[in-house]
Image 1: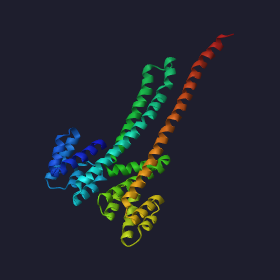
Image 2: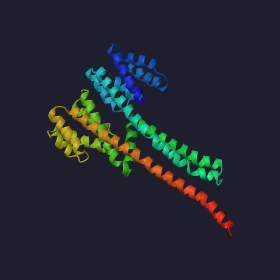
Image 3: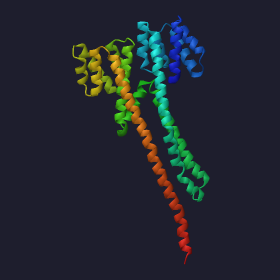
Image 4: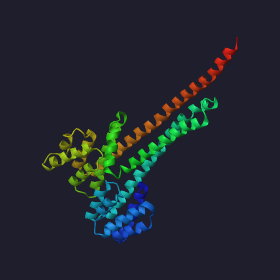
Length: 325
């Protein structure tokens, strides 16, 4: 399912369940209103429910929701807060859909600028008959099609990483190996960790269970290991702030947010505030990168155009000088 479809699924599920319909019948009703792959997925969920499995076990088996949702679905079942939690999940995925849509739209301008940069240089050679039309199309459109296919594969892998933890960690490691993206990649991991932890606590999950699940769902395996060391420290009596400060992987502002939130008894609120701020900073960084990239391409295209024009007319100039006695 896409995030827009997930948002609608959780919303419809909450509405039907609140009307007194059991989870299996609710799933079957939603399956009848869907088609294609989504219908097959919901059919799998329905079959697992009819076999006596719980809702979160059925979701896990069908791989129909992001891995971060599974602990929340389990908590919703255990606490009897399915309607409330599913409504929150619906809003969460609606926000994710809008964020991805914003990123996708912001990449359109750089893409078409890159396409122009790739296509234009061969035009002068084509008109001067240095290359054939077939050669031009192969070198320009062929390369563009190949690069487009690569970007589509990367984009789809990125979307799948929300549903597959192994893919998320593979993508994290790849991004972490790129110096220019390393800092952004790290901040994205902490933003997701804080948002997940806050959401779980707000959904009624026990603090230590929420901390454990947030670590296990993180794309950064180092963060998970740090959480595994932090939990026994806090359970043995160490203050939350000191337990987090002992792990150098956590930024000071996140540690401070957890400490102040714990002291004030408003940890979910402080974590959400931190996650929203980091998310805003990350989006600003991405927007800056998106704005700078076209400018660089513009100048490269202009330089290539000038070079092609000069080269085109210098050939005629050389021929004219040879004719002149």
